[in-house]
Amino acid sequence: MNPSNLVTTVGGSTAALYHTIDWDKTSVGRFESWPESLKCLVSSMLSCPIPMYLRLGKDRTFL
Image: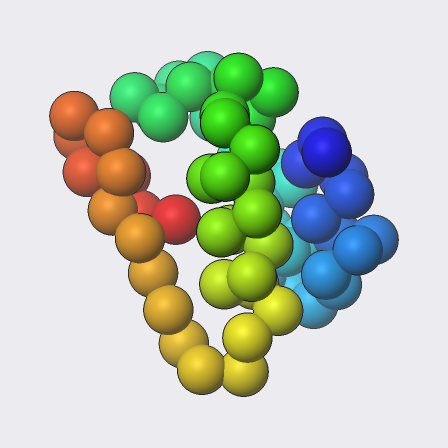
């Protein structure tokens, strides 16, 4: 999965926003380096109608 798949698979404006973020500049790191479990969780969060967030990394980046 790559960031653009979040837009095409999940859809929505928030998923589109994820595609524009330079994850290398965060403690979370490159999207491609994320474990599949984290990618799956983010995909689930973006497709859920209930607002959710996750704080991750040493600087507690909001996902």
